[in-house]
Image (tube, rainbow, N blue to C red; front, side):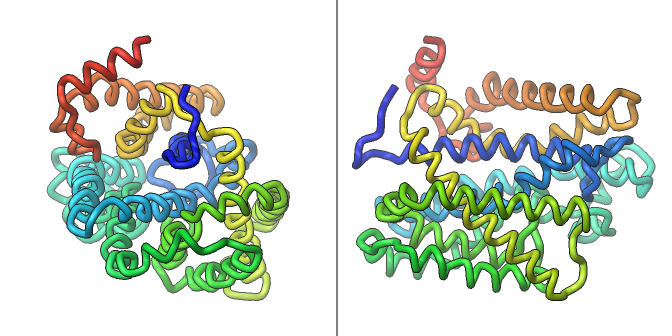
Length: 385
């Protein structure tokens, strides 16, 4: 086991990324059973523990990714020039995105269409129609998923990287020396709330608007990458956790008993503010827990950290495919849930461990660096120990 020293990589961020990636997997499994719109639904909806889990994690799982991406961008630009940085972005994000758009998304759209009686016929008959119109929302008329369905995160991160690069290059030297203080903690939620209140007029992705994610990415670069923030997190982390849990409880209670506010009103604005404070405080609480318990490296982290990108790319298509074969079966919901989670996880990890990680062409397609033969042999020996 390797413990982090002051000048080494922050392993807690890698652990958080891996753990949250697994939560995203469980969240999309839950979408098969809950009452919210998704690409395919089970024949029986669960309004209790599965829907509770969806509400519990749905607000903050993608925001934490954009914050960590902003932090990673800051550290990447400390050791790379603009050309090298953008080359890596297009290779690590652009190629998997194209894979998702042209290979992984068509079966997902087909399954959505056929299970909702919007199309009859085989997948081969459907495929030419995949390019009919833009897929803009679940249940819409267009089929072409130009954002790669769940891979919209890669598209957004690629666009954010291009847009912010000139500014980040000019200001990167002025980030680390500044302190993060209580005023930042209290004031930054204001622009986030303004961004969240515009969600009805901005494209909405996974509970939040593009501007909201864009601000979190910028905050990751300018604020969450500071060493002083870690010191602040150690002081405020527990309190942030209490506030985050209270906001989460209020949010779940509101949705469970009153539903989502649909029209712009005072109650709608209060609902949005609760959600923003929920995300903001849980971000600090997650970073607090990571800094306290996860600042170490081992073979498991090295393996799962590399596996996280292929896992993310594959998880939703695999979940939807398995869901297609079981959605009309008469199994009890807990049985289906266990089968879906276990089978999807096993298939994804087998595809990664035995195929993707061993073939350089596939490694590139799934956002990984090419591996030399001696490096692969060394990693295989380490894992087998």
